[in-house]
Length: 199
Image 1 (spheres, rainbow, N blue to C red):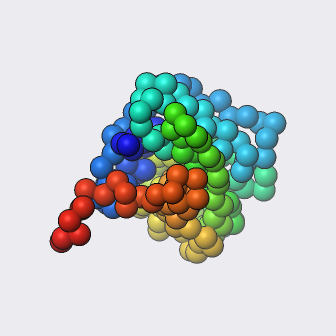
Image 2 (cartoon, rainbow, N blue to C red):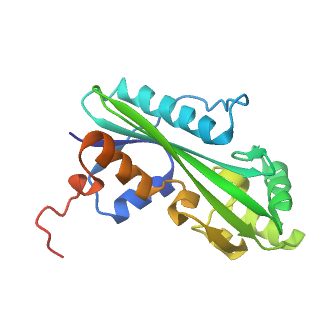
Image 3 (cartoon, rainbow, N blue to C red):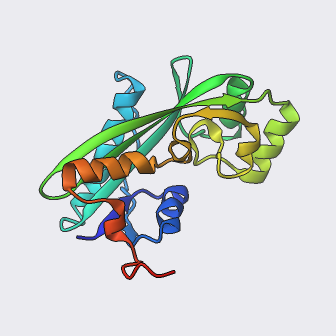
């Protein structure tokens, strides 16, 4: 069975590539409509499931991995900023505060499916307007929940995290592996390109 990542996120693809896994990428090709009536830990699982199921229709013989990430501050959900003004608004709100990052994960095949979520706390430094505008101009974080990436210069804003670092990047690898073992009796290493165990 081949692994297909149901995401256009270069960060999720990079995490799997760094593990030297064999996988392909298929974007879900559907607008993300956040279900406001659900708490964030449920909403991200619904969105991850929707992405994975859409791709499964095109890849029925594969194992599909879908994921969705949001930033939450005081109960307010921060998805991907629509423009510079919203990115500025997001970063000003996060400045000097503790927020949460939720990622929902869905694994599905033609035979079965499962979902789960990860939560991480992130402590942000206090940011000046100059730092905010410079970061947005340099890094264009319009495809990132909360308008920052911990894998780029956004890491300079992060004083501390509590929980899974990779969850903040956008793909909680421990959770993905745990779901694979629990529901599919396999792990991510089953998709490794390094079958011989060599270096």
